[in-house]
Amino acid sequence: MIETLTTFALRWVHSFQVEMIRYLFGAAGVALTYWLARRWTAPRRIQQRQATMADRRRELFLSVQTVAIFGLVGLIAFAAIRAGLIRIEKGPIDPTVFTAQLIVLIIMHDAYFYWMHRGLHLRALFRRAHAAHHVSRTPTSWASYAFAPIESVTESLYIPVLLIAMSAIMPVYSLAVFIFLGHQILRNAIGHSGHELAWSGFTRSRWTGWLTTTTHHDLHHSEGRYNFGLYFTWWDRMMGTEHPRYHEKFEAVAGRSKIASDPVLV
Ligand SMILES: [Zn+2]
Ligand SMILES: [Zn+2]
Image 1 (cartoon, rainbow, N blue to C red):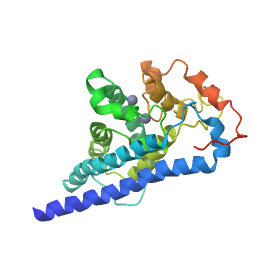
Image 2: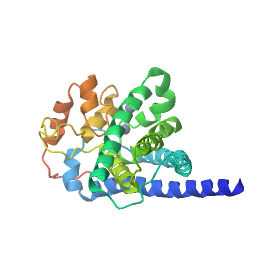
Image 3: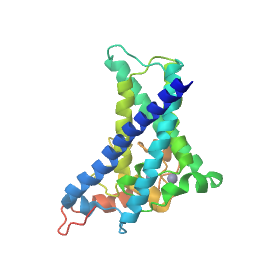
Image 4: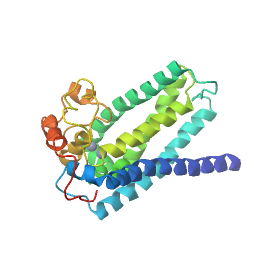
């Protein structure tokens, strides 16, 4: 019993460290890169209002709390692996199966996030579960994991639930999960960065219009009632929840000059 508790405690510490590195890679990585390239990124700031240091501190504090909760939910996945409910593929990588698993992980996460997010916006849940994330009216990349504890749990339950479902069909490549998580934090941090770096025409093109942009999620933070999607615009378009002036707001930023004469700090 003591041995099992120690194993789980050590596992939690390990998960906390790994998830913290992932968060810092995304949040600090994007903040630093945009600051270093501020000559190009500054003219692309979406909102007039600037986030303060107090905003960033609050976002960082909530994100560290979220990382700790992610570690706890990660124990469910750990227990499921030990119980044989999640099966890890240990053999050589089959590129087709590997790619299929990665695509399934990303597409299903987008669907899960959209509907979970719509749920969190219901009057009964919003205040307790999601208002903390929306305190950031002008988000920064540090807000990537700035959630109330309830949202931290609902956000992270996706991993054990989907891995158990996938394992019922075939063992899962841990590298696919690793890349999925890397893609998740990068898109998340860029989506909260407050700067639109995509080019004019991006949202209307049939080649790129299905991808969400930073303006897409920034509008969700500044106005709240639209743009619930994560990686793709499909669900918002299908359910009629895309911001009615999304393209216009995007073009207003994307059409600006790429070089600032007077750089502003990110
Ligand atoms: Zn929301
Ligand atoms: Zn957000």
